[in-house]
Amino acid sequence: MTPGARLQAAIEVLDRVQAGAAPEVALTNWARASRFAGSKDRAAVRDHVYDVLRRWRSCAALGGGDSGRALVLGLLRGRGGDLSLFDGARHAPAPLTAAENAHLAADPDLSEAEALDCPDWLMPDLRAALGADFAPVMAALRHRAPVFLRANLARTDRDGALAALAAEDIGARPHPLAATAIEVTRNARRVRQSRAFGAGLVELQDAASQAVVEALPPLDGLTALDFCAGGGGKALAMAALGAQVHAHDIAPARMQDIPARAQRAGVRVERVAHPAGAFDLVLVDAPCSGSGSWRRDPWGKWTLTRAGLDRLTQTQAEVLAQAAPLVAPGGWLAYATCSLLDAENESSIRQFLDRSPDFTVQSTLRLTPLDGGDGFSLATCRRKT
Image (cartoon, rainbow, N blue to C red; front, side, top):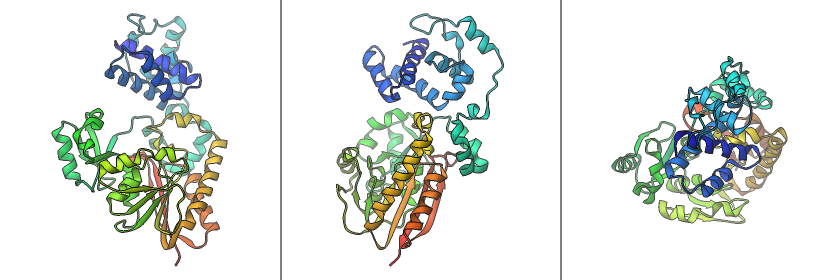
């Protein structure tokens, strides 16, 4: 595919998203219908689409509308791209119209929310939570997230993982957020097919997520329950640090990959449908807005509503109420979200403590994309004996 044809494909995918399709579904359907597209073409189209999703408002303002064509025009304008690719040749987008040329010739006049690609209704909440970091964090969320790996301590150490990656020409370096964190700097798309990944030396996991596990009480020998395990990333990390880990999720299908991942990693994680008993540590990585990870899932920024946020905070309260009785006396309850919003973090844990006087907060951790990884919040509470 030519560069122009890749832009046209992105336009078509974005039109499907605008019509109501989820981005991943729209991309998958395009790829299935475009057998001529090679792996580099598919990657390029995906990159165009996700670059627009991260910057939807500014792209719409710069391009003159919310159509796929206008959004891609706005993306190119915003980053100084080559507008001459709109020439209609070899499946490229049609030439610019007089109206488009007039819009592109005018000086852009973006509001703060448009320039930072922030929903209007969320600006007060995010500004209150982030303070002076509001604008820098929102600007960071407009860019692609780094690719991070976790050195699997059950198989190797970080130096060993770095050496294995280097042997396969995958550029990587240590990252300061966690002792296991590795940032991929070159050939990131080779990771999943690498021998280092296949042998369980490394796992794909954001550095902030690794920092959350590292901030938990010492795990060696503890019985731990990952109450909202999902794909099991944190469960695997806890097991690699010596915990006896049980994994639970309200939707068990989300955990279907855990056995294969655990086998590759050389650790044991037991899935439980109905957790019972008393655990030394219960980790609640709660369902949340995902605002700290909008670089990876930018469509969530534009589909979140106030009603949706209210439902999430109610769910968080319910999950904490279900998890707390599973903590042994003297044990730990760790509440984490990948959210930047106080409503899902400080407010949620404060309301939980008001209802649960036998728990006290022992430590907290707040991370934003300015720290390098995703935004994360962690409150570690201890149950009284």
